[in-house]
Length: 110
Image (cartoon, rainbow, N blue to C red; front, side):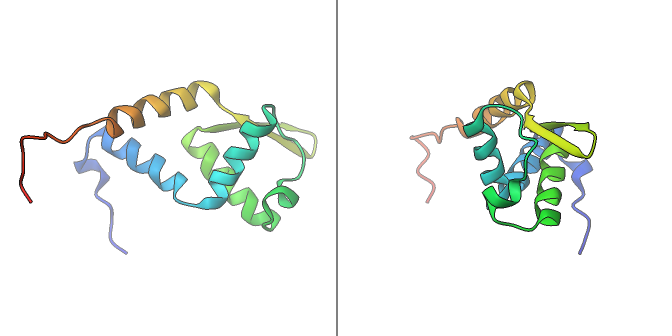
């Protein structure tokens, strides 16, 4: 597979792409929805809630943490995760600006 050549794109374009990639898997969406539903940190097992194997859940948590949508603390042998509220708000702003672009009604190109 070739390189993405991300350096030729703006930081905003790369950020939107990274966010879209993370949202591109339903397990990550389910994890985020569960974290919002419980409205607190989860230290328990997401395996029962999501229905995937522990290594798979861990990989999805890693991707969510890497982009900054969740944060976690290690306490003994357990890791607690929650939504990073500041980063979530920032992500919403970035996506809102992108998604709120409008098509010029006067341009009838196709």
